[in-house]
Structures are given as structure tokens and as C-alpha cells.
Image 1 (tube, helix red, strand yellow):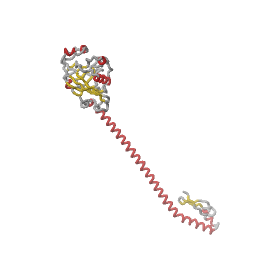
Image 2 (cartoon, rainbow, N blue to C red):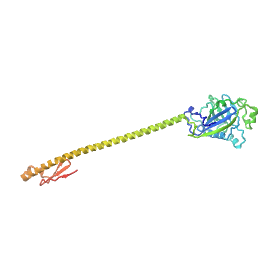
Image 3 (spheres, one colour):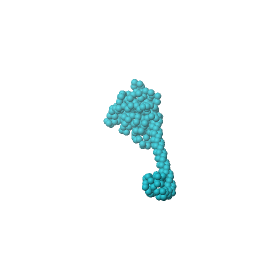
Image 4 (tube, helix red, strand yellow):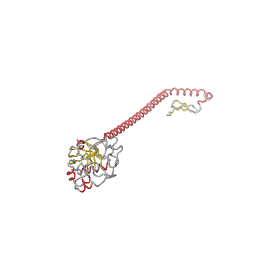
Length: 328
């Protein structure tokens, strides 16, 4: 198999489930033909880790699909290997994983573990044949961990002698542990696994099945963040423009005042000689009339300042002498 060519996306069935963790694509060959599965660690972390370990260690090679029940399920997971470590995995139980919210539905091809009670999962697993199996998923050990992506038609063709006793006349599980001869001799038509290849896919790698709905939410969030940042930037630019306009208005107003002041200063400077002449004329009159005349014009003899714009002209109280000074 080319692992990158057999890529499906089961996430569209569960838009609220985030599938961003590690995944594994398992390509298997059987006596009925090839099929491939995808396992999701997000669905069942403990179940995923154990399942991938079993397939990577070739636990299922040459083992039988000993319980195939049409319109129900197919069960497998008893190794014939004599490797002590592999056989040990049949007895090492793992903790249950709680179902997700909302829970994974048992659609056709969904994989889960068989168990005998809480925290009893080890190596036996099953593939669902019927989407209407409402009883599946009620037990805590039946949390799904994957689905058949390709070759489900082959999986449904696995030969059936009926369910196991007491529900049917199929193989007895306790006798399968002794080796393949029990099934080969008594149930020769039962199909078996040949070999499997495992391809782990880490987040971000090609072939990683991403939750489309969640990705859409993230894109909307990113787009919202971009829009928000753009709005903030526009507001900041508008604020800077307003400050700039106010600054220009202030400068313009200062320039206007400055222009007015300059015009006043020019007018005052032009009027200054006339005022000086007026003061000089008054001074001549004082010289002519003497002290007697000062009675009528006594206001000229007290020290005071004549205000001409910014220019002040101080007068001597006795002589009325003119002194010019510029006070800014």
C-alpha cells in the first residue's frame, strides 16, 4: 500500500470532535483481501496506544477472525505467536477511556475493544457491521478508537459459523488460545489476518485527518482576529490623523495671531511719530504758558505711561520730557 493514497476523513461525521492528535493508518491483508483502518488518539488515548503497539509488533499476523456475525460485528485479537512479550499483552489490561461528548457513533466500520468489565481492555477488538447496533457503546470499555477507511466490503465477507456459544455454533474462545489447530481443524472456512503495516501520522504531516469543522472555527477565529487588528489599526490611524489636524489648526491659529500682531506692530510703529509730535507740541505749550498753565493741564505733570500697543511712553512728572521704551 501507499499510505498517502489511502487517506479518508471521518471527521465530517463529528463536527464537534477535535482530531488534532497523532493518528495511525493500518494497512492489512486478509484471506478476503486488503483493508485499511485509521486510528485516532483523540478518541481513546489508552486504546489507541495499545492498538498501535499491537499492530507494530505484528501481534495479529496469521490470527483468525474467530467471531464473525453478519449484521452485527467481527471480533479478533488472540495471537498465535509464542513470543512471551506478545502473549503477555493479552493479559495486560489498560484503563478505560471515557466517551467523548458528543460520543462517537458506532457507524459501520468503527473499531472498539471487547471486554469483560471496567478496565478490562487488552488485545481483543471488533469491527462494527451495522450502524443500527444501538447496544454498542453502552459499556465503558467500548469507547471507539478508529474506523475502517477502505476495504469494508472485504471485511464484511469474513466467513461466519454463527455467533460463539451460547448464542451460536461458532468457535469457543478458551480453545483458541491453544493454537491455530483448533480453528483450522474445526472451522476451516474462518478467515484470518495475513499481515499489517503501520504508518503513524503526526499533526501537521501529510495525510493527517483534520477535523474540518474545527478547522473552520479556527479560520473564523483567525479571520476575526485579523479583522479586529485591522480595525484597531484603522482607529489608531484615524486618531493620529485627528491629532495631526488639530496640531495644524493650532499652528494655523498661531500663525494668524502672529500675523495680526505683526500688523498691529506695524500700525503702531507708523503711528508712533505722530504721537511723539503730539507730545512735543504739548511740551512746547507748557514752555509757553509756564507754571500757571499747568493747572489746566495738570494731568501732564504726574508720572504716568501712555499706552500705545505694546509701546509705552513714560513722561517725566516735572518736565514732561519724553522717553521711549519698547516693552514686549
